[in-house]
Amino acid sequence: MDVNEVIDRARDAFNVRRVFGEPIQQGEVTLVPAAWVSGGGGGGGGEGTAPEGAENAGGTGKGYGSGFGLRARPAGAFVLRNGKVSWMPAVDVNRIILGAQVLMGIFLLTIGRKLARRLLEEKPLRKRLAR
View 1 (cartoon, one colour):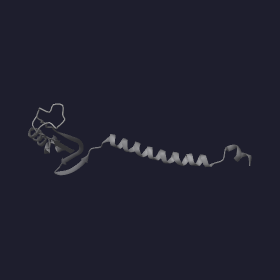
View 2: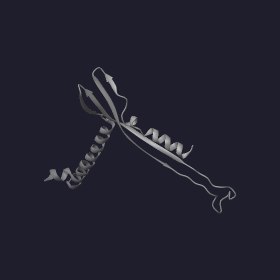
View 3: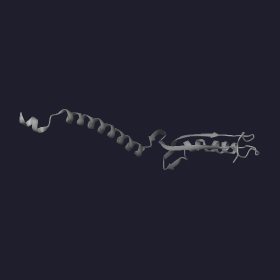
View 4: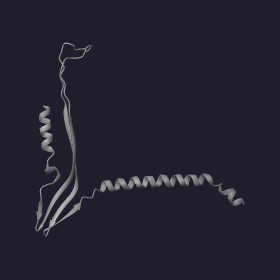
């Protein structure tokens, strides 16, 4: 595949239809879905003869490479109702759960460290009761 062909395909992939979907109409309500889209690409090239000391010194060198990636996730939707536009964000439940797990882990580490310090600093129960 030619580098220019890959660039043309990438250009076709990065268009407004990736961000805003086709409007959906139900009665008097129109919904326009939207997404966060990001991507990137890269390419390479090469020409010339093989380097000195290479096993196949008689051949000529040549090499090309290219690629691109595209990431899209839902952002929400514009809702058109009675001539007014409102934004309805998409809720990513997985992100909420991950955030809660991270916070709980930090909380447990903090409380666990304080509890361990307190237990190590206290005298054994027998010595406290003997007083």
